[in-house]
Length: 522
Image (tube, rainbow, N blue to C red; front, side):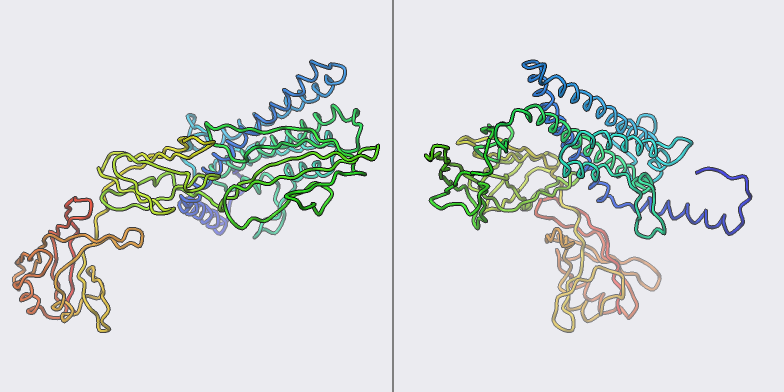
């Protein structure tokens, strides 16, 4: 923020101070779940950029091979493609350098984009992108505008050209709660956490790679555009399966279809003629599984004859599914049944199997239960799936095995309506009648995430006489002893005593000492 030589009024100084305090409060309240979500999106975009880069490199390689075979016809288009790649690489590296500057502003000179420490820093992006005599945001906006116009000039298809212009738009934005439009860079990077700013820049790199791919596809299509002998050419990829796992085999036939739109073939599928002339076969399956279909095309010839061309294929229907996982919470608790979900997209549940180290893994229908043994050792769940008639390992996930959290001790009693209630100490206190009717104390984890009962082994009650001397009494296991109940009867309203040295054991077999309870008699 720039400085001013003008003296500020007390009111303006107060406003500035409140803004600083508010900004600090916002920084402290950025949700870790939101930051983790940005991190996962950033990782996904990075993988997508790598995949798009491979696709674009393959297109360029195709143009290069054609230029070598037919220089007169292919070299002009290959030279244009190389120019597209060169300019795109410059824009991509510029965005990379800006990401590094933002992370270093937040984490210091050793900041690493792949391992951001101060992900919730709200000032670093604004400092780099919006401050100084030459803010990086304005420079990046001008670069994107120039790149957008260059790529758009190569696009023949108006729909693709409009898509690129929308994807790389840098128009001012009217944000909710503002009176006027903000510049593109302000709307993107003002008061943004570092992880969000980096993710937005990675998304911009994704848009740049998308635009590059569309341009390369257009240049590749232009190579043979002058040799067309029919009025429509289409490239089709016909895979044997649309699902493939790492280590498996992907097989597909890649064909070029030349059609005369004035005399299209007639298509029959499973004995029925399609209701359109585009060869579009659509259906809405109601059950999961793999389904085969076959048919034929009837192609009329100029001499009046008709040839028949058979085909067959299949499709796989799976249940809609999504996997949501918290990377920081790969935890199993020892001694109890931990329900987990295991599925492999594209593979029926009866084709999925799994094993586990440091414990047992059982299955009931589509559900799995992990029962780890030793605390402190990792449990590794290995998932196998039947692909192409053979078993393949498709995933191996590590879980930390921890002991159960300490339970909370409480006094269980029946209220006036006969309902069981838990008194955990303090508060408004506990009725003396309820206290005398309670058999003893219990302990459990009842946080609605882990609802697990523990066995109380022993405890003490500590009373204080009129001189302030502590009088401990020992329980009978988890039950109040007769001496303890006699002490309860002598308590008057407002008096209090303590339940301490509570020992309990859970299903993991670990005995633990629990926090004391303060009991107020009302």
